[in-house]
Image 1: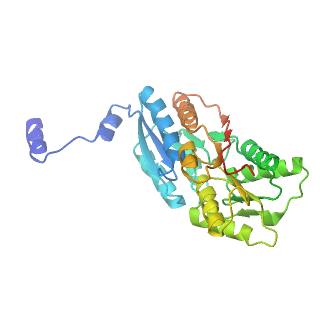
Image 2: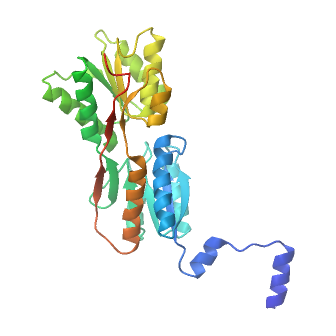
Length: 301
């Protein structure tokens, strides 16, 4: 009967399922990763750090994208869980405000590590950049280079990364004894078109800013587009600081001053945390990776 089954399998060009084989051997050695997208340098560099560390430790990485969708994020987690991955590394989508799908992972004893956009720090380990400190440093830099009215454009306020960067921006203003004006803060969605709308709102106000801190690269490039479309000069009329990788920051004109993440290190750190959890370390850790201010042409008056 065994020979007959083999003959049929050969005739049908059957190939064994590696995941099923891994389950049978009880050693799948697979890690799942969920990111909002894989187009930006930010996520691709983090994924590179994750994969380098995973491969060195003998793990295979499956990468999925949520496309900033809560439903896609939930579906990816369900699919990865059904594949019996040994653990998951996740960056939350912009839509995610309900964390029941993550609590279910806790119930199933599936190790989870979050990065960049995180939640439930008492339950899950995470790797983040120094969000408040980086925004405070960026705002100080603008003030030290002659800017006096600094606008802030960001994403949805319920995202911890937005609230922390906004907090750092406000702290720098308080530190300089500059009155806080609510109309200079526009938080909509982390999206290029929304970034343009946010910038239009700031520049259309009766007393527009002379500088803008944009909390990610999409928003920074959108702001630059709107500023130029109005015939204004960067940085003479409006200075700008963003968060972007060095490659893209150098390709725009003028070259963009940025708070730069150590993205590859963030990925490596997240993967190390996950592997430690897979091996039985139940300690919940919050790792903060420092950011670097890279001064270019867009911020010096």
